[in-house]
Length: 236
Image 1 (cartoon, rainbow, N blue to C red):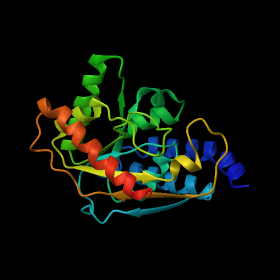
Image 2: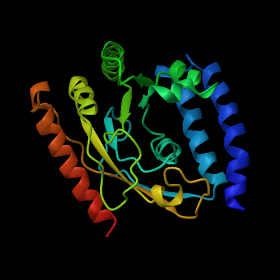
Image 3: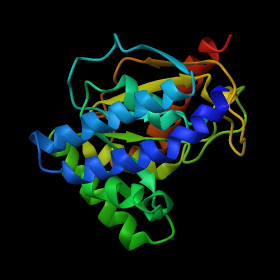
């Protein structure tokens, strides 16, 4: 029954809230009203699926600006992260295919989420510049450093260099987020929703000031090791 309700509600909720987010752009500092609507959308989507989310964000300063790094297991990660990070005004760095979805994609772009076109270096660099400018204005950025949803829930996927470059250029503390449970509820390619709980835990933010762009490989290795070890602790 939960799977049916989720499927019936997902499209109309997304359509309505995408439209509202579009219309509310410009209201509040840094489109804060549209962001609150996105967070409400996330909570309602999870509610329709009977999905519980627990979060421990005690390592973070309330309302601070961060570049968030989150591991990625499921399409549910997006509403789950919106639902628990409502106290932080942030945008996603997302693959460009999401921005081609009717209504939803244009609303994402209008609110300020950043599209990254990996195959086009010039456009990718323009996207990085927009992300850096956005973070400098006080809006956080959320990156999935694995670059795609993982299908192996026993560990984390290999981190991509592109996300490291973006984070280092932003010169903002990086807040690692460990997500568990979402992949078992709705794994990549699955059509049926399972019951379960998504758990999100913030690790202490990482100061990136000791890294330069030349250190991006070392930074990638350090972040990957940090988050993988924490993830393995959480799934024990």
